Image 1 (cartoon, helix red, strand yellow):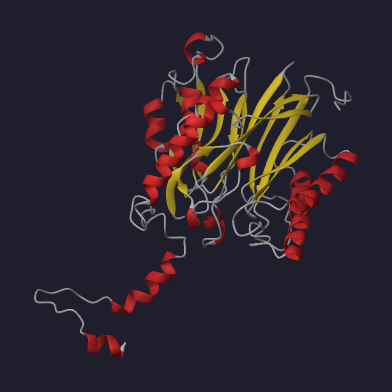
Image 2: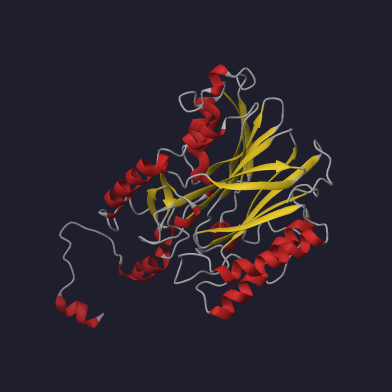
Length: 387
């Protein structure tokens, strides 16, 4: 039911906050009972007036909270609400003995802002248009930089987005805010003026992540979660599984242009143990579960209209035969990459393996390395028996 208590054209905030709070049968899928626990928390918040509306869903082993409200971004009440929802869901996970219960909750208590505590956050505050279509993208078994290529295609590539050429409201281009997740610095680059510089950075998605896209007039077009769990926790505890919000139509790319960017299943980092490269496969919610080699990496997309802050929808956008060939291509790529086994480029390079469990294996071998000299003789069976 659409409530008409809010005036059209007022500012509304859309917050998408996700966390891995435990999953069924390994890193596979969220249990419905944990979703119910989170839903109850958000339902109470809507009844008490903190939220205008909400939608709870899941992609892979990540519980997804989609919320609308009037509090703005980075609001402690909204972030505290999400934290409470994840805690309640985690309690259910522990009661059911689900795998990795509460994995993404890196603290025992909420400190006023959920950023830096594990969950991923994408938020935007907008002034509603008469019709306000948005798409919420949710990925699993990959990292925030997985959205770099699609965002470039959506907002800078006229071969993908015809509106860049033929829509005068988009012809001036967009501003890309690129975040260096290691240095914590951002840079604003303009498309089409700076497209080569944009590509020079975002072509390294493990470090440079498109955080925001704005129109030239300053209106926000897209926002992406940028939390890196390994940099927060100092060790591998799971991949980052980003979420993204994109506004559509009327001066922004059309819905079909936004979705077209995912018709090519490009290679992303993540997959098994966060240590492998694989294709990003667009799927419907019913297929958003991790199976083969804990994947392959998947992305789901839900389309909504926002009216007076209420969520109208969703439409499960990738649950469509138009993406069957994309999924087939992804399966072929997955098969090809898997045949590499533990070899690069399927397994990530050493700089990206630093926060995985591989360093623990290498540490055990440290004392067995010795200087190499000409005439070197390998150890004998007798030496092995003494080790």
